[in-house]
Image (cartoon, rainbow, N blue to C red):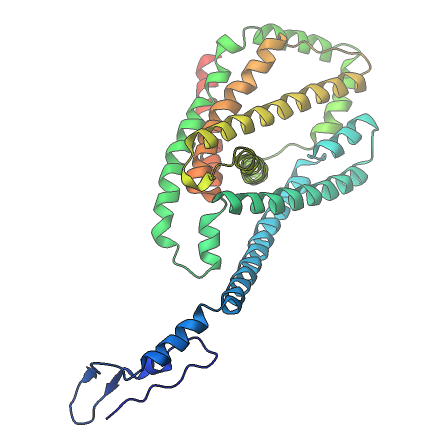
Length: 363
């Protein structure tokens, strides 16, 4: 039974290939036709169609449209996750948690509903910038959220879960154990004297003003489960800002400035970006602590609470920020956003357990 090769017109495919394997009624099995009766002229015409610049342009346009849809789906999922985390923080913590809203809340004595409205707007703007720009930079440098992206493409994710979870577990436990170091007595030489001095001030006539300020800015007491939920929300916010946005953005900027391909495995580029991200994050953290401390002192009307020397106040947070930033930055660049989030969650739980255990025995 001969097979007639159909002429390829505009499809760019070989319809005759679909007839190359067929069932012969005289033989109870499939057999492959030894040769397709397609002339060189037909083969050449089909190849010419696939090599056509217009055909290639259409394929690229179709591919970019698919990537845009995947980008917006990924953006929507991460944005919704971040929004839920922000809403939980606002509902449980009491006072606003975002920098601008907290600044206005303490400095201008805003009412809590107004301050929370500022915090919600600030969070929405931050999430849009962090996730949108972060995903653009991450995709450009070959990082991001690989498990989420595979799931959105319909690819199997179970084979990749082990490579994400195991490194996250190791890194998380190590970071959690390291958190004990900044709480050692050597970094708190004035702990007892500071506590005694603070108790004297609280029992003085100025104590009522301090109690009023603390009650207004600290919110209600939280249960253990609420504290754990706040830690989860803080981790999600922190990783979206520090890893997806800040680290990916720095890698992209350095890659453009040095004309280096970040997906080629440039260790110098990656590690330089990690340490720059740590420097930026630590600077912002210390600056905010200083600003809030001044706001608190101004709100208390000149009442100065006892504190440690400046170098010690700076050293303690750096002992937490730098090792965690190195480990989580490396994990993010190697395993992706999901692995960094899991490691940070494990570190939070392990750090709480280790610090509680250590403090009970050291003090």
